Length: 111
Figure 1 (cartoon, helix red, strand yellow):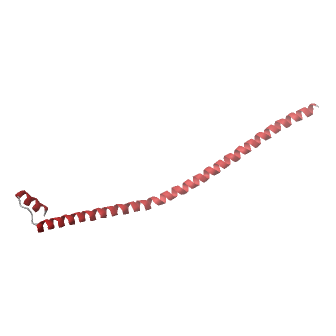
Figure 2 (spheres, one colour):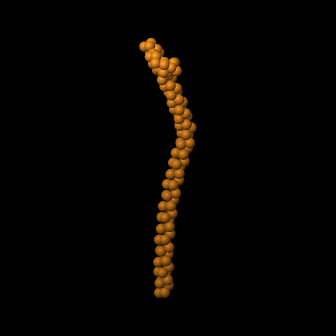
Figure 3 (cartoon, helix red, strand yellow):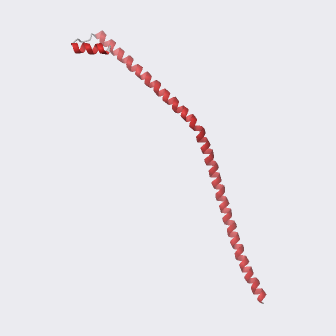
């Protein structure tokens, strides 16, 4: 139909009003077909993205759980380090007391 329209314009014929209406209708149908194809492509892409989201949600949940476990482990490690620090401080105090008591014992033995 489009080729006929071009041929008519090249030869100097002007299309009749009924031919113009047919051409516009055909163009509208073509545009509508293109829009339907584009909508179908978009729908397919959206479905693919949904499937990808579903596939990724399980690994993401596993990573979230691992992160929570790691955070808890880090908290536990921090608590252990803090307890170790307190024990080391208590040991230092005990060591100092032992030294003081040894000095006192030495002085008492001198007397």
